[in-house]
Image (cartoon, rainbow, N blue to C red; front, side, top):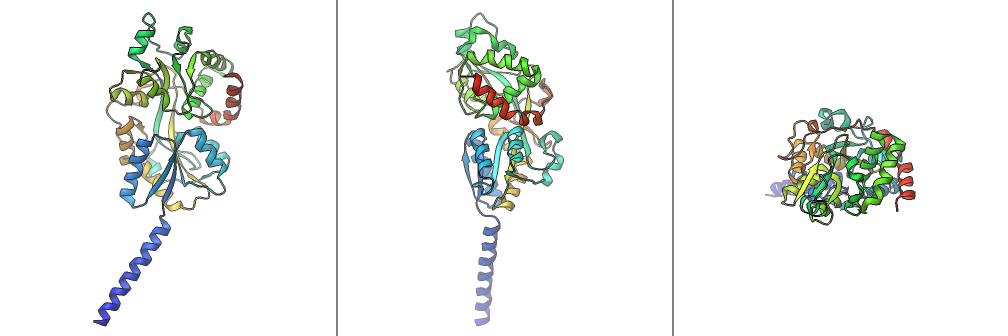
Length: 333
């Protein structure tokens, strides 16, 4: 009887010990999330369900979170930066704020989705387009054909009816700015941007704002990620998504913070985000295009093969970022 009780006590103590180790190794994961809250909740809940690792997240704009990551690089408050175009992760890496991690799951991904040094990895493809609210556009511009190209947006009649996010805060708009600079060249690109800016009725900070404002009919025209426009259309809003020629494509990325206190859990989360299951879940919510070749995009999402994309130089976009945003701030009021 005593022997049996001793064994039972030993088993309980051992279980408590190993549980304690597990909690120490895989404590609560902290995520800075740039992607929408709905997707963040769905993904982190599934991750916790599969691994038992609890997650807390802070959702904010790209500019705010990338600046936090850089400012906190010696003592980070988060373990993961989830979302944001590659140029922003390159910026954080150059500031010494990211931890290199080459996930085994990254071996199957296309080269454009994986940093050579392993500091960031793409989990979905981002492409820019023009969004229209059918009803408002027909009411405001009954005699003007719907815009099909980036140049079409320069029509003076559109003044006050275009919504474009603020590139200082939003990776969506910075990608748009680089789209024009790289397809037209520096001088002609700035001519385009400074001709367009006075026509814009609002420069919100959130990359998700234009699709929402177009969907609700507050503006007739906007620049947005194509998948965001398709999502609003699928929800019943009178939205049309236009993929103009010579648009730009990039990847939404995930990175691990340098000096993270929860490296093992952070690596598990990266592995999870590169999985077929996670990328199909995200696509089912917001129509993004997975980078994992085994994952299938949601019905209605636009395959990359159907888009006319420029050859986007990510390194140039990152190197020019400070100069471009300074010039924007000086010239766009």
